[in-house]
Amino acid sequence: MNEDKSTRYHRLRRFVELATLCVWVMFLVGVLGSDTPRDWIDALAHLAFLRAMPDLVCNSVVVASYTFVVVVIGESIVSPLSLYSEFLLQRRFFLSRRRLAHWIKGHAKKTIVHVAVVTFGSVVLYAAMWIWPMWWWLISGGLFAVLTITLTHFAPVITIPRLYHLRPLGRNELKNRLELLLRRTGAPAMSIEELRLGSETPRPNAALVGIGSTSRVLLTDTLLSDYSDDEIEVVLAHEIGHFMHNDVWKTMAFETAAALLIFGAAQLTFYQAGPSFGLVNLPDVVGFPILVLAGGAVLLILTPIRNMISRHHERQADRYALAVTKKPEAFISGLRRLATQSLAEEQPSRLAEWLFYSHPPLSDRLATANARKLSSV
Image (cartoon, rainbow, N blue to C red; front, side, top):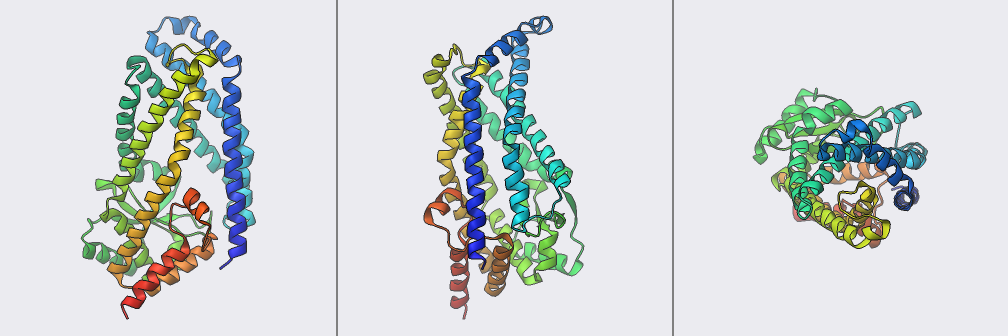
């Protein structure tokens, strides 16, 4: 294991994440304390063509314009940190094969999606505040749940194919073996596709995406080229374990509950802090940074809980894969190779695990597999 190298990599990555968070907080506080947004919004709201529109439409245009500008400026400010963490740091530790032009193109796509989602979400939230000032947070939570389910369902057929190159799994012998595993576990038939990422990163990956009729398993080309059929079978069994335990639905339920807490905390914070910044009513979009900061604080508090739930799901999926395949040797060899290629920390500190780890530490997962191996002897 490259323990020293992996520890150094993760320390640098976490430092950049903390720096990015601090920059965003300082930026939003600065926006909140400035008079410029108020002057700009007042000027925009008094434009003749907007004043001729219904109040809700006028307000939505103002919200969209303001949040768009704020998010674009914020993303521009943190883009050097993104360049370091997503490109320079990855290249330094040989975790990425992307060229700078390729990274810029991918980062631009991601930023456009982020800006569009935040802008649209803000319009919906502020429209709910305008119509239901007391219950907007509850109604918005319900809309969040519907949107999350919709996006999760359609992501494999709309979003993912537009961001990544997919193709059907071409190795017939392996495909038949994996389809047999699906039938043997009682999982519904689902598409198994190859995700082409080898030109971007040497790190292998696998994921179960979609729900219902769009459920499918994605295996990266690096996983298919570097791992044995037994190891790939164990990886698929792990993903089937997530499906059989309804982990996608459980995760969406947690995210919906988290959204309700975030929206509720945002409303409470606005009423407590809003008057200090000259805000007289909740739909005042100048208070957008207050809502983001309050929601972000709740999200940070919930992160260790989210990680703990995720680690529980991963442990369940590991045990399921070992029980179904009865191949602990393949599990161990594949996991060790994956850890080496991804610079995983074998035994992070408990604090690091609590704050940052959505998967159990490598040492814990290996111990589970070794225990299964001994019990089968």
